[in-house]
Every structure is written in structure tokens, then in C-alpha cells.
Length: 40
Image (cartoon, rainbow, N blue to C red; front, side):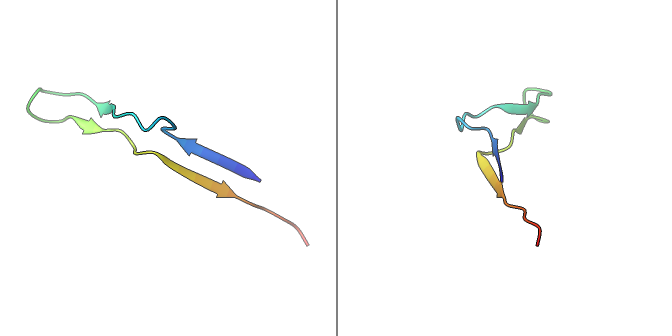
């Protein structure tokens, strides 16, 4: 079993920073993935 968390606190941050009027992109929102593997 694996649990992956992204942006756990849910804070807003910039992934890339460019000119003040353009090229500024927000980072990934809070998300999670739960994986379960098994063999038979």
C-alpha cells in the first residue's frame, strides 16, 4: 500500500515566475493518490 500526498497544506504558490503581468503559473492543487498492489 502506498499513499502519495501533493501540496498537503493546500497553500497557494507559484510554480514558475515570470513578468509581473504574464507567465506566472500556480502550482499543483492539494491532491492524493492511494495505491494497493497484490499478487495471487
